[in-house]
Length: 360
Image 1 (tube, rainbow, N blue to C red):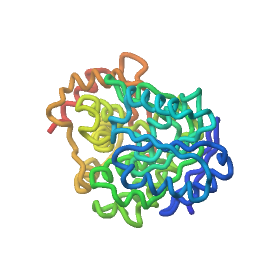
Image 2 (image 1 turned 180 degrees about the horizontal axis):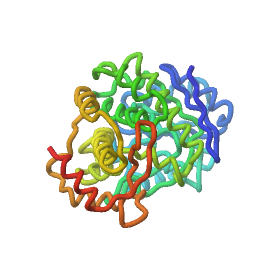
Image 3 (image 1 turned 135 degrees about the vertical axis):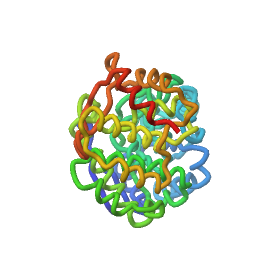
Image 4 (image 1 turned 90 degrees about the vertical axis):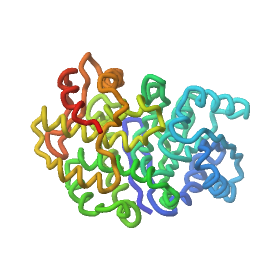
């Protein structure tokens, strides 16, 4: 099996990537957690598909209690109410600090379960078991959080998992929209990576059908490698980890204004990346073939424009509430060239000038 290791100041842990990666879980449990209770947090979409399978995988080898909590699907899982419900269920079940949480699901489940793990009895261990392409970004690096009505991921912390088990067979049931959402994060990694990832990604992924199949493992491994190198240097986003937010400033604002779940995270971030590219051409002298990029992503199935019902001034106001903003000006991750991200603060006038060109 392909194994990458994530090195941070607080922990080293493996990312196991394989079509049968889930078989490694019993070795992990026997090695360190054989006397722990297992608590699986999953959602209403994933539970009917994989909850019994994972539970049976564990109980067939270990005599350990396994309980589960099923939360709403998608961003609805990442609310303070659901977060509190998880704690209530754990307390009512008598779970102690010798509890291991398994986050079985996409990015939303991983964010929620990780935040529950970080806070239940001041911290219990957890393992990420992602079931989406999108989660190749969110499952690695230890960012865990829930949403606030005024902003995405505003309530959270940094808390690293014990392992990430990427069982690629779980991705076979993903709908088209979720595949596109996840692949947008691979595009992001390729644009900020100081190597040939972006060129190779364009060469390999020509149509939507190329996103799955034999290319899947390759770009997941490449994307995780990009993220792991950044996280190793800057675990808690005091410096270069902010580069991973490329496209997210406007993307999160679009998600918040439309209502979480109305647009997928990746679709919103892709629009945010287009905006960041336009800002980069305008304000950091980026030389970039916009037309080629737009043709590529539109052919894959992405929208290139901001939904017309969203007001530019309101989007700007929401961007100014972004947790990455540290002054009256909004801080963006831009590109001086592909593979060379930079941080730049822009005035309202500079932002609105470009933002108004982004509408349907």
